[in-house]
Image (tube, rainbow, N blue to C red; front, side, top):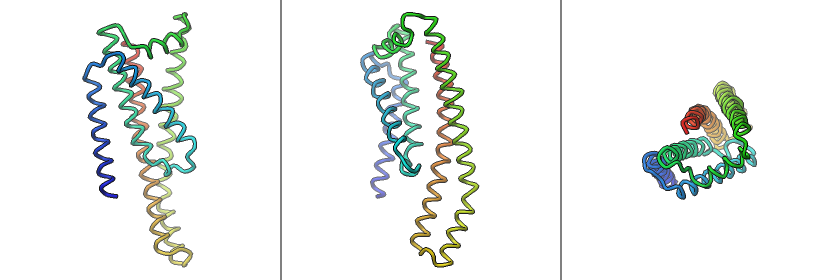
Length: 202
């Protein structure tokens, strides 16, 4: 198990190095198209998995995955900006999506863009950040009461030592999860601001 965890940590470290390299190395437009398609696919996959999860701890890697995907999206934003400013070519994916949204009318496209920015930043990002912050605070506040309830059940003989140990571990994992989500939501908020600035630069 420890060997598996070490390999997982190594894989994440290598992935972060690759993502940082994407920010600095110029990419051909066709490579950017592939990475953008991969990013959209991974986003939809994570969304589908999160919709069918019954308990948050069943998807305990979500905060780390969200952080990695956010960095990946930021790297792609920087790469696309480099292509637009140096070659005036953002690739087929961005061009196709832009043409689909604008629909041949730039005024409508600008209005839709403003609406998307407001929805993403004000409603989704800010709302999700606030929810994560409140959930983390309530989870930490409820920890002493849950610990006392476990001790009471253990002392009264309703549960044994193994079950009490398992429940304490679940409480700690839940606190770690919501704490990580609080930090990840703040990072996503910064990424949303950076994305808006990059879009105006483009």
